[in-house]
Every structure is written in C-alpha cells, then in structure tokens.
Image (cartoon, rainbow, N blue to C red; front, top):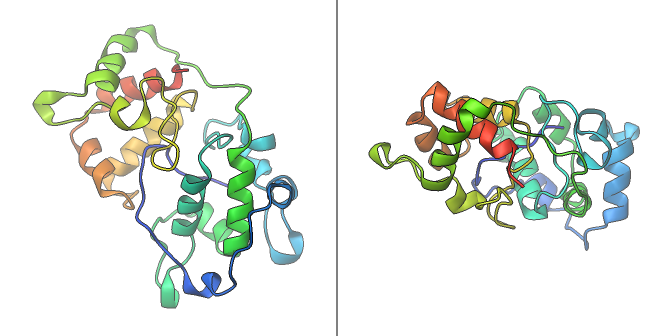
Length: 218
C-alpha cells in the first residue's frame, strides 16, 4: 500500500457508502492483522507486502509508514477510495486506488491506529554531501525570492512533522520524497493545492537537494 508523500495536507473527504457502517473504537490488534496478513475473503492485500513488516519499508518506491499520525493515514486512505456516487477518488493512484476501495471506515481506523503505534527501525539516510548546503537552506529557510516557505515550518526542524497535521519526512526515502514533489509540481498528484503551488516554484535541483536533506533528518 502506498500513502502519501509525505508532504501534504489533504482535503477532508467522506465516503457515505462506508460511513454508514459506523466506526467503533479503533482496534490496533485488528489493524495489525489487516496490515500484516490482509483479508483474502474481502480482497484486502497485506500492506506489509509492499510497506514492510510494521510499516518499516525497505523498498524505496514504497514509503515508510510506521509512526505516521493516525489521522494522517486515515485521511490518505479515504482520499484513495472512490468518491460519493461513483466519483473518482480525490487522490489518484493506479496502485493504491484498488487497494483502498474495499476498505471500510473501520478498517481504515484500525489500520491507522496500528501504523501510528509502530516505529521506524531502519530510517533512510541522505546520500549526497554536495546537496546538503542547498537542501538545508530550503528546509530551514525556504527560498524567499520565489515565495517558497521553509519546509521546517510544517514538517519540523528535525523532520518529525506535526501530529494530526503534517507527516514526518525525516528518515523517509529521498527518492520517494522527490517523486512526490515532482508529482505535485506536474499535477499528477492533485489532492493538495498548497503543495502543488510550492512545488511549481522548485527546480529539479532544488527538489533533489531538499529531498535528500529530509531523508537524513532525525
């Protein structure tokens, strides 16, 4: 399963067909079972098959999910489901849309609680010393001349994010962050207007530098 970039707030979204079921108190134990094993009878694929045991992915194309705020995970999964009356999902992903479609609100609540209680044991690292200076500059201070805000303003000086508002980016794969910024910029990822506007002002070199810098934050 793929969740977002890590660099976004999303638009609030409710799917009546699922919401009608009602949601009981989230159950992390049930969430763990869904995450690690899926539910073949309902067509639910194990999240761990792509995102690793306990959400600590070792595959750069699939982001680390462990420890992301439950509210953030919920929001992303709901955005990936079909909209009301058959409307397309708010967030389009050829991989994740079919994965998210069969999830009930209860499934999402349980999965999100489980993910939020996990810890990344093997964080990604920055890999390019030549990018540190530019990446740090953008992360800490933005680019005033292009009206690009500091990433730290929302995602924290150490990349830990703000629970309930912004996801952590520190220790996330740099290539994943880079891809998401490029998708925001192109409009391929269209569920977050603020991130689209920011990414539009960044060059390829600036995106690469700040993505690599974020991966090394702790």
